[in-house]
Length: 135
Image 1 (cartoon, rainbow, N blue to C red):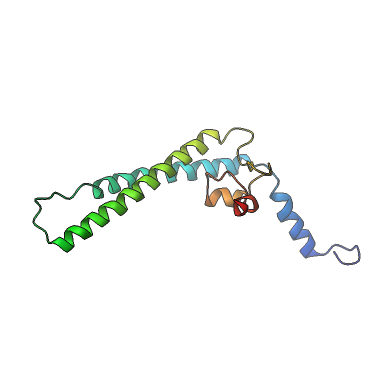
Image 2: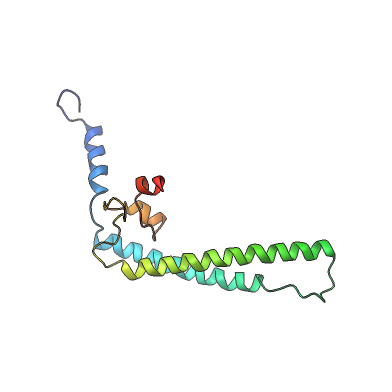
């Protein structure tokens, strides 16, 4: 706003700011719910593969020493990925179970509404971007 006269940029800026404080619409909740379900399903499929890849390398398996070390390292990395996938699935399930609560999508720290775009990127987000950056 220059000299008390609003311009188009000010209006667009105001719309973005106001949108950040609005609660989600029913359509946005529906979209977010579907996304969470999809991510949970993807996580379950990933976990099946990672569990298979995390099986121990049999000591009687006739592979070379370097190859065995590679297999053990790969197994350890897959176990870490599996733990992360399980944790992610748990967080998504918790978020999905709370999606219909009135405070869903509200930052735990500042109590402002978390932008819908952030929730699309990280459905289990508990903090808005400014508060998350301070953690």
